[in-house]
Length: 434
Image (cartoon, rainbow, N blue to C red; front, side):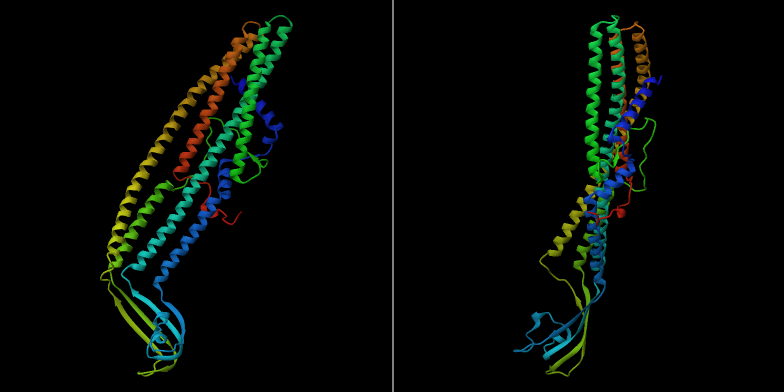
């Protein structure tokens, strides 16, 4: 029953041992994705952007702390006319004359949520940058996965045609012997040679496709083509697992965070309607004073109440509210799109599995048919046309089986990646690696 498959396996093993392309170490899918991520300039850039966004959180949090300046001043001419220098506290007093120097501390004591909303917005931006890593990582992984299975598909089809070529050559030699002894027509010899050339053409074609795809896979991984090679497809019943996580679709997560960020921006815009309480203190020394007694410190507490800013705050609130509505609608669109993509993947997966089951039955019939046709021909009971048709039918089923299996594996892997499966954490990527 599996006579022909044994021939194919043996032929493929011999081909692999004799070819330089297959002498290298075979890659696993997880290793391929990992190396593609490590080699991706886009992911390295994303990590640096995430670090920059983290610094933005620190910038926003600085609003909780006072600012302290060391000021120095010297002025001449009309007294008290140096305010445009931006010097505050004692040093900026109109009662000072001559040189002065000291420390000025400023603090917003209470801003009714301005700093808090700014921090929340900065944290949302940082979260978005990290989620962009997951989105770009998905794109990198998807490209590597598809290329990996293309390479495996072409290698398996090369091995199939290599086995068919060996089988047709064997038949052609037998036909030549029959023709030489006058037991078969010269037409059979031409038919046999044609079958050999057909198998050779397909074998060489898939050899070329395997090499070119392996070259592209090596480029994605950042390795030499001679270092490693993609494996052939596994048996149809075998599974190639990814590394499932508890994460969900990165596009949905990113869109949800955009909605969260839009809510924070709306809250931040509304805080501009509210007052704020500010404080200032300074200590220092000055050369001379006028009109008042000398004091080496000063302090103040003030309340700022917004009255009218040309409707700027009103328009900013309206803009933020419209952006929140838009992001909410975009979230629904992303969820619908991802559901549609998953449904398409499911259709392909179900159809491919059903097709493989049918092909396995056809494969058994084709193997038995080829075995019978070959036996009958060698016993001078059948025709070469029967043997050729049986061989073509078997080759068609073998190739179709490999194509369907590759589609199943590629689609299953693509769906897993889309829904949160991963091979390496983004933090493990070395952004400094050239």
